[in-house]
Image (cartoon, rainbow, N blue to C red; front, side):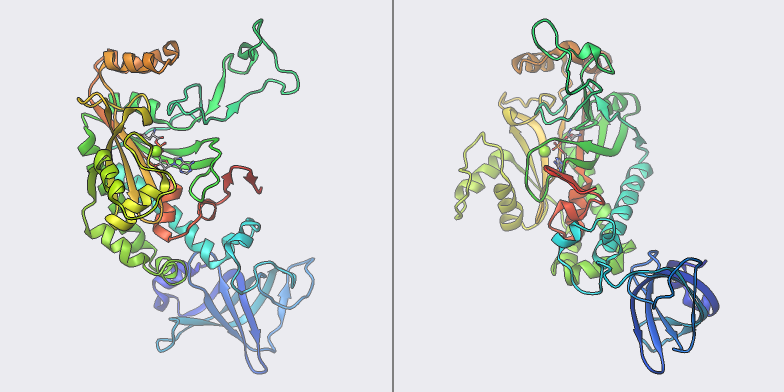
Amino acid sequence: MITLREILRCPEKYAGQICIGGWVRTARSGKNVCFIELNDGTSFASAQIVYDPALPFTYEAGLETEPVRTGCAVRVEGELVLTPNAQQAFEIHANALHMLGNCPVDYPMQKKRHSLEYLRTQQTLRPRTNTFAAVFRVRSVVCDAIHNFFQRRGFVYVHTPLLTNADCEGRGEMFQVTTLPLDNIPKTANGAVDFSEDFFKKAALLSGTGQMYGEVFALAFRDIYTFGPTFRSEYSFTARHAAEFWMIEPEMAFCDLEEDMDIAEAMIKHIVRETMERCPLEMEFFNKFIDNGLLERLQNVVDSEFDRITYTEAVALLLQAKVEFQFPVSWGMDLQSEHERYLTETVYRKPIFVTDYPKEIKPFYARENDDGKTVAAVDLLVPGVGEIIGGSQREERFDRMEQRCEALGMDMTRYQWYLDLRRYGGVYHAGYGLGLDRMVMYLTGMGNIRDVAPFPRTAANMEM
Ligand code: 4AD
Ligand code: MG
């Protein structure tokens, strides 16, 4: 069966008799002529089917002989007629109509505007709406753009494990994985959970980053990236935090923080360019119905250079700001979402890198700067979303890393394999993590992470 996507690429080629299957978006019947707007999922655009009211439907065995309605699955045979003067390039004059799947009148996806909140309760059906068809096709294209960005540059794609025993970010926001009986947990003599009886004979967690494993491969292949699911049990009831999200983590040996940012900037521009090029209908839809300034803003991202400021400069800007922040500003604090948005939306109005954060608010692996107070870490902030990338140059000096771990009271017996990277042929290296879901939010103007994840998981929320 031919797809709409193929036809739309070159309708002239298909003029004549064709057969197509799809779901009915709308069905209208008049005295002299009937219309079906048919979408087969392969394209954002639908096809107009025209037929004579006298033409009978045939039905798949066992189906009820009900009228064609919004939501039905049908097969259409007919003649593709070019309509060069109409809005659509062609229409299909049906000569055989076959019902493959009935749909009752109470089909929840009627042709009208539904709120995004309502659609979140309809996760089985929402991919059939314009908005979600556009979001999820963009998401797929973005993934391809990311892979080809790195593959063309010779980066090796590494699958880092999803089961881990390392809390790399050190924030304790990890899901425990266990086969221990929860109603009868074995305990050691001093009352702690006895993980020696667990599946791995030790505690296991769902990975919150593949970074440490990525570093292992970067110190063998030089340039690598990971691309996979990430889990965090953060109790953040914001529109930008999910408990399960996808992250891309490039890691480069012989790379410092400046080069790290160069690659991040080139990657973001590549993703934006590819998406605008390959999803023109979807992007136009977002610009029209979701976020009016979207296309102009994204074009500006491609054309402009991202600014780079230090954390210390950022704090100075915030202290001069003429707005009241909910969280008071002082050097040493973690930047809150309101601060990030003020910087990127009000002051710079474009993506900005903020670098050199106080070491206390960044993970143990970030490389200490000569001032002894800050580390070579970076966040990329973008208008509308805030932090989209977090990264750093890694501490490659064995002594410094050991001291830092000691100061933080970390149990380093568990991380000897990681320290080995500093013991054997250690070299300066850097990397970052891009949140895929936030990238899709940024590209589409969608304001909630639950509307860019196919099956969102957020705190207190897992529909199906
Ligand atoms: O800033 P984060 O925590 O950095 C890391 O995990 C590093 N190990 C990355 C690295 O250097 N290799 O997370 C990176 C990005 C964030 O900037 C954000 O885009 C996304 O991951 N992210 C989340 N996205 C959705 N929901 C959450 N709960 C997220 N937490 C982080
Ligand atoms: Mg971060």
